[in-house]
Length: 497
Image 1: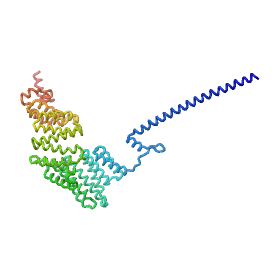
Image 2: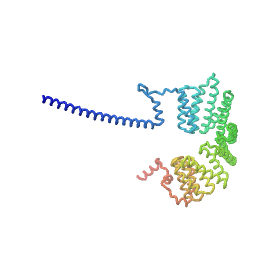
Image 3: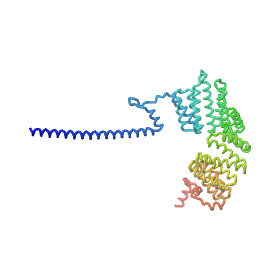
Image 4: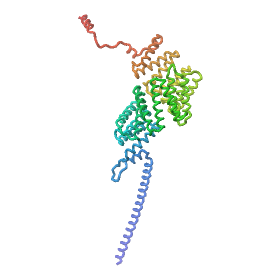
């Protein structure tokens, strides 16, 4: 019995010890699991935070792409089911906004999209499709200056309008179709004038004016639209006649535009600035009969209106000032030259800050300032300024460009006027080398420069200082002739035998 009881006590103690070890193991396991769960929760929270940061850093374009590519419940990518007429309205709105902000590439892209959507919505042959083509043509001309594209799209619009015109037209569509016709011929005339197709441009303007006289008789046309269209057509006629050097006709059209613009917008409107500039250019282009004082008055009026309007951009505001300084430097001497120089310095400072030192506008002002210095007998300063622009012109226009060649020619002519023949000849040779590559050796400009160099080299003292190079020796050697005279060859044979 005692042995049995002792054995049972040992078994119970062993069982109790086993239970305690199991309890400690389970406690450790629970601690480990809780720690692992906490670490997993921490990792999950860290990943959630990182994902939240990444989603917050997504830009608007990525969000827009995600909205367009929404996944449906079955996992298939969704399709943008926006109706094309609504897309057309959105594209027209964006194109108008980009055109107001002068963002040419974005505006042209939206106008092209409008044309494609208009074809889907209205089908071929509808006048609204022609209107979208006219808008595209006007965008190409006003924003990019592409005359060929403008002419092409206007021709397409006119062809569509001729197909769409039917005997039974609704009273609401009839004035709109006439308006699209007028805009198509108007933009075509401007493009043809830029391409120097003056006769075709005059015919297009005549057609636009004839349709305009029919259009204003319709009761649905408002007076504001009539006045705006008449101003546009008269201004196009004035510019076309000025291009053809028909100065009396151009002046009469510009004066008509001036009266209409004052009546429509007021005496201090910014719409008067291009009209005054056009009148000044026409007056200066008359040659011997030019009245420079009248041109200066026109430019002064344009400058006064531009400086009074704070909403204008800096570069547009200083355009009349630049033209005014040119007129003063050409017309007068002494005191007006100082005033013109102050105007040019003001323009130069503004363009350097707003456009940069290597912009085309800044370089153009520097050239005008250098010419003004030549007129005021300050040739060394003029040469210094022109030489400082050569590096910038090479970056903007290229090393082999007409602008760089003209700069070297101007520097050479200033050196020749000072009696420094060697430096003048060196600059003219640089100009000649560029002109040969740009225009060719048979160009009038290249031949004039070569003639001036030959006259300078006719002087023995100058020719002795300038040694001929390999290019001159190759140019002056006799031409190679591959044809051999047979009689001469026979004579040599007879002499040999």
